[in-house]
Image (cartoon, rainbow, N blue to C red; front, side):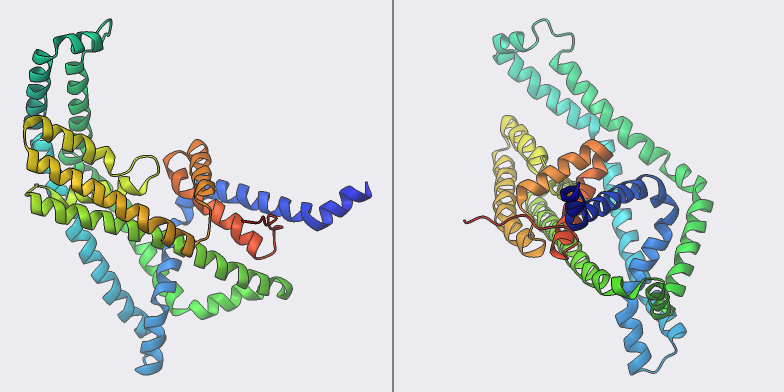
Amino acid sequence: MNELKQWYNERGRKVLIVLAGILGVYLFFKYLLSYTAPFIIAWIIASGLQKIVRWLNEKLHMKRGIATMLAMVTVLSAISWGITALVRQIFTQANNLYQKIPLYRHEIMEVINNISAKTQNLFSILSFNSPITLENTIDQLFQGMASFLGPFLSKGSINVVSKVPNILFLTIITLLSIFFMTRDYIKIQRFVHAQIPSSMIEKMDVLKEDLVSALGGYVRTQLILMCVTIGICFIGFLLLGINNAILISIIIGVVDALPIFGSGLFLIPWSLYNLVLGHYSMALGLGAMYGLITVVRQTMEPRVLSSQIGVYTLVTLMGMYIGFKILGVIGLIIGPIVVIIFKTFQKAGILPPFKEIDE
């Protein structure tokens, strides 16, 4: 009994606190995020605007309210312009892709028919006792693409118009929250600190610093690698004369950031397809792009990730898988974040660290 009590006092209490914290994070993301998202976004943006507001307030002697308004208008206008231009390009290129789906289907079916005519035995084996032929599979694939893009393009405007009141209300709430949180940032921080026991403030400051550093490092790592992939794809597509370069580059960059998938999910079949059609330069270019992305990512990722968050790759992969099983696709992002939080708790002394071993 005494041993159990000693274990609880030394480690058990900390373990229970962390487990309760993980459960709280899960419940928050599952049930409360939609209600608090505007204020979380506002606080993040307000934190980012502090340096600008402080500079305007101290160097140009502006009142915090005016400095806040000027910083908000300048920064948010630039962000809004960039997002609007990007969304317009994506929508235009998605529409072009949707219009060309029948052409792509026709080309692929011609390739399949030519291969089938030359290798009848192979295709007879592949389609033996199969209720769905290869042609039907291709048809279903393109029908799925059309059904995905069609409503988005044809009904997108109607959906946007129908949601304008909610979007407008959400935008107003977020902008007002950004203004007040930015203007009264110091007061809000002091108020929160006043509600916390002084004995916990120092630990929380250390924990906050470590968490911000680790999580920021993880986000920076993924953004750096994603931007590198998008940049390589975009330049490569321009050199190869491929249409819809921006849209396809962004899609490949996002998919490449997800575990298991990677850029090869698009580039390898695309390269093989062009190779079969006899477009050797295109096939070689796409293959070279995939090789370059793979080499650059494999070279950069371990160095950048380990330097930013210091989490073993296998542990990160386990976090992604467990997160995916619990939360679905969003768990691929939340899982590594939980791993980072766990490691940060160890570093801050809230959890006992693992025993070290000799290399």
